[in-house]
Amino acid sequence: MDDRHGHRHDHGPTIARGVGTPHPSGHPRIGIIGAGRVGTALGVALSRAGWPVVAVASRDVARRANFARLIPAARPFSEAPAVLDEADLVLLTVPDDAVAAVTAKLRLYGGQALVHTSGLLPASVLEPALAAGARGGAFHPLVAFADLERAVASLVGATVAVDAEPPLLGVLGEMAEAIGAQPVRIGGGGRAAYHAAAMLAAGGFVGLLHAIAEVGRGAGLDEAGSLAIYAPLIRQSLANAESLGIDAALTGPVVRGDEQTIRAHLDALRRLAPGALRLYRAAAAREVEIAVARGALDAAGGARLQAILLEGQGGTEPA
Image 1 (cartoon, rainbow, N blue to C red):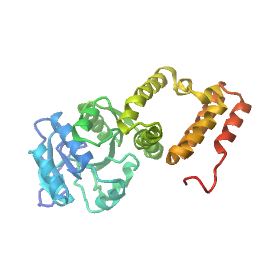
Image 2 (cartoon, rainbow, N blue to C red; image 1 turned 180 degrees about the vertical axis):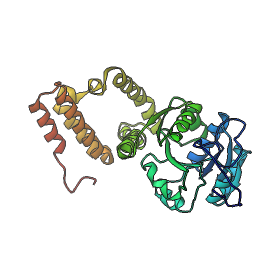
Image 3 (cartoon, rainbow, N blue to C red; image 1 turned 90 degrees about the vertical axis):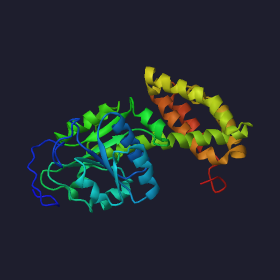
Image 4 (spheres, rainbow, N blue to C red; image 1 turned 45 degrees about the horizontal axis):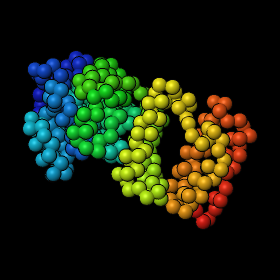
């Protein structure tokens, strides 16, 4: 096919020959569209792993400058299509809702690959940008990108959900392993469920911590005090779940069927932490289901606890 400059590219099925002579490293040239937290962290991690990060696009001047400072070899651009003239494999690291709009502005060369980092969207969402011989894929690191260096460090041992057809699938697997992560293929049909579970594990868990801190204030603890007291218990519960299984790791008043304890908790929450009441009820109801299923609590005891959890719900409590 002819590129935008009138040059002819005749490439085989490999990904690393999209824009001409292969890079000396043997790896595809990486371009990144989106210089936010995800794009910047991946760019830094890949560059440190020896993969050539050659271009970045962002309309945000400060983000472009920061990316160029961290990875001087990457040419900064304000418009996404410019990256395609520099890279063999382009990472689209924009928010999920922007993927389709940005994709519509792109038209890849044969031999190139476009890969989004959404945990939700299938690789097929990229098809409008793919010319004959170009490939699309997904590369979603299961990492919290709250801080650059913490995120880069957290990639080591993390899971990366990849999806593509060969040979791109193999390239994405190699890329994940290069930054210390473990690639796992999650196809389009399961990505929404995969991503929902990821949200519960990350943002959902932060929401739980927020509720724990609110309840802790009712006991006279500040946020740091609540984290200091309850974080070891959280770690122990996680360790038990990993070694014993989730159901077997459940302990506490629900497993024991302590109805008066649950009533006391609900009363305290109504008075001292009403914002956490609905979350407590939902979590405790799930605990009841687990306890009954594993035989630690009989059906009658479970029904009584569920009834207690429903008591007092009405217009006077937080929605």
